[in-house]
Image (cartoon, rainbow, N blue to C red; front, side, top):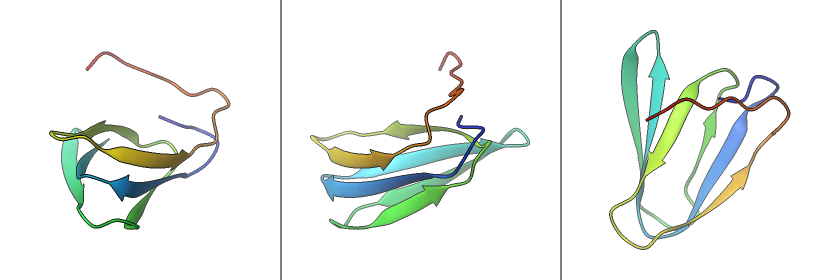
Length: 70
């Protein structure tokens, strides 16, 4: 979770499922085409799940990034 700004995730190759958690609800965003991207709003807990070789580009405001066990 990044409290100081939105994070951009762009799919370079492969496939990814972005899992966002807000108010105990999970939202799944599927990126399947090269160049697709999603902007994760600041303060939203998230993770990325892949099931094949995948390359992603992350543009992240890293200050005070928080992590929690999966």
